Length: 249
Image 1: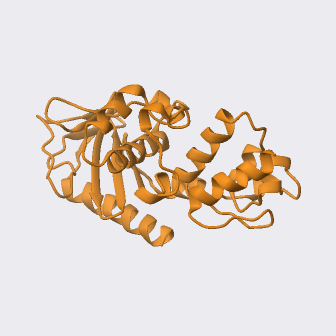
Image 2 (image 1 turned 180 degrees about the vertical axis):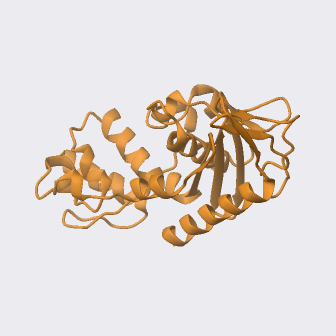
């Protein structure tokens, strides 16, 4: 019974027919949804199966799974390549497709979905529903959460990270500078960890199109200070963005 409903769910999520012997690869956004759905459906599963290619049988029963030490998932790959360090500051980047997180065949009311409540907070869901395209807004928020996870020193679940606009409409999360952008079916987010070594000079001005810091302060490293130019941040962020885009395509 659990096999059949899992097949039906995955077919809707991936927008294609999934059979028991189908080799499945999912993005980090899809992984979050599958993980949440399985928990809410009360279905036992092998979490390590989601870290690479798997069949439904391997997901539910673990048959034929290799050691997780030899597996590198798409999300793990992105984690290792989209965390940039500049002195005591860290930059996390994440990119997602809207239709991967919210496929047409899996239409749900965000506020009424227990599955989505494992990913987003009530305030985030309420905020998104006030927008013309809630799915687009939530995908951007999801990217910001993933970007934060990549540079956070504390392991947190996605619904333990809250991303909401400030009084100026800019995305914020405690301890992080954020930027979210959308283009077509994609959302991308950049998070900067504002640790003790990062001092922001005046206020950060965000450009409408790039959404990147226009002016940065100084970083303290080993008791010395060095200026971080905006061109450094933009170059590093764009390199990460282009690399991830190529990987997803």
